[in-house]
Picture (tube, rainbow, N blue to C red):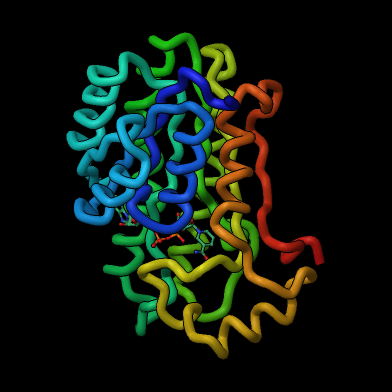
Length: 247
Ligand SMILES: NC(=O)c1ccc[n+]([C@@H]2O[C@H](COP(=O)([O-])OP(=O)(O)OC[C@H]3O[C@@H](n4cnc5c(N)ncnc54)[C@H](O)[C@@H]3O)[C@@H](O)[C@H]2O)c1
C-alpha cells in the first residue's frame, strides 16, 4: 500500500475531490482525518471508510480551531505525516465581481485557510520526522478566468506561491510541499455561473481533451505527491486539466 502507516488531515473532505482523496488514502493504508464545516456529510464519508477515518469539525479560517484539530489528530493517531489543504469556495456565484466582502471571504477560506493549516501542521510534522503537504490550487491560480470574482484567482495564486515558499523553507525539516491545479471538474458546491451547462460546454470547447476531469483523476495526483514515491519532488505543481493551460 502506498501510504501504509501514514496519518493525513484532509480539509474539505466532506465533499467532492476531498472526499475522493480521503477514500483513496484510506484504501492505500493511511489514517485520515476528514476536516470540514459540514458535519453530516463528513460523518457519511467517515462511515464509508470505517475505523481508519475520523471527522473533525474545522472552519479553516479559525486559527484556534486549526490548532485543536492538529492536536487532536496527533493525540488520536499518534503522529501527522500529510496535510491536504483542499477546502475551498468558488468565486463564480458572486453578482458583484468587485464586492469587497466577497474578496475578504474568498481570501480567508482559500488563502488564509491553507496558511493556517501549514502553520499548525508543520511543527507536528517536524515531530514525526518530516511530512508532505499538498495544496489544492487551480488552473485559475495560473491564468485569469471569465465570470468569477478575481479573489478566486488571487487566492489560488497565493496557494501556488506559498507552497513553493514552504518547500524552500522546510526542505531542511524533511517536509515537501507541492500544489495540484485541477481544470474543469464536477462543479463545486459553491459554484454559480461556472456550473451552468451552457458555460461548461463553452469552456469544454477549448480543452484539448474535450471533457471534464473526474474526482479520482485529481485524487491520484494528490496521492502521488503525498506518498514517498514523490520523495524528490517539492515546490512543484501538477496540472490535472486535460491540457487546458498547455495551449
Ligand atoms: N470543482 C472544480 O471545478 C475545481 C477546479 C479547480 C480547483 N478546485 C479546488 O479544489 C478544491 C476542492 O473543490 P471541490 O470541487 O471538491 O468543491 P466542493 O464544494 O465539493 O468541496 C469543498 C469542500 O470545502 C469545504 N469548505 C468550504 N469552506 C470551508 C471552511 N471554511 N472550512 C472547512 N471546510 C470548508 C466544503 O464544506 C466542502 O466540503 C477547492 O479548493 C477548489 O477551489 C475545484
